[in-house]
Amino acid sequence: MRKTLRNLLSIALFAFVLAVSWSIFRPAASQLAANPTDYGNRLFQSHLHDRPMASDAVAQAPMQPVEAEQVTYATVDGQPVTGYLARPANATESLPGLIVIHEWWGLNDNIEMMTRRLAGEGYLALAVDLFGQVADTPEQARAQVQAAAQTPQKLEDNLRQAYQYLSNQQASKVGSIGWCFGGSWSLRTALLLPEELDAAVIYYGGQLITDSAQLEPLQMPILGVFGSLDDNPPVETVKAFESALKSLDKSVQVHIYEGADHAFANPSGTRYNAEAAEDAWGKTTAFLNQHLK
Image (cartoon, rainbow, N blue to C red):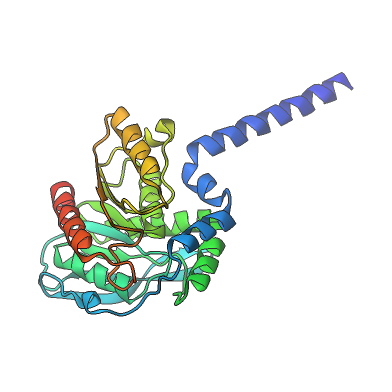
């Protein structure tokens, strides 16, 4: 009887230690899945009265001619995943790669335009699809964010395969960039691939991690772009994120634009701030050129 009890206690202790270890070393999944409803609601509040509306700014042409196509880059749960791949039309040598991660609206026309612009800067740019659908209203976007957040391991699998796809395409280096929901997942891609990824760009990603222990494995330089009016994440969290990385002697640049709100860089949204967006684009391309080329 005593032996049986000791065995049961040993099993329980092992399970407890395993659970604690999992939460420590898997911050991307655990934090995103902690409260999917709350996460979706916070994004909903950040995009209140926002709509993915067409504007002249969406038609921004890339710096050079590019070619783009739909490609199958992953298989998740036995289902093929299609993304949007763009590259310079006249490229003859291997290019640095970019994992491009969409906002909470999904892989829509705006993200495809941004992917072509990135390709025009000299990159093999792959826009991933983490939802499998596109939203037209904040209510639809909230629903698909909450659904995706229920199974973060699928998103992680998706992004790992995106990295592998670009590697198989002979990408010389690989970075990540994302906006809004995608900004959070650009950071999580860095956490998934702390030694493999060569650079990460985060545009107003609401789920920043400020715990130094969780950020410590990161080896790549990081660029963060945020708005002073945004409360998802608030400026205080942005500064705590920056301080945590600097305390670890990580390479990090953070820019907070005065008067800019959440989604200020989205030319197809109602919160577009052209002056801030253009300056952030210049800083983004300079950062990527420095670390990926």
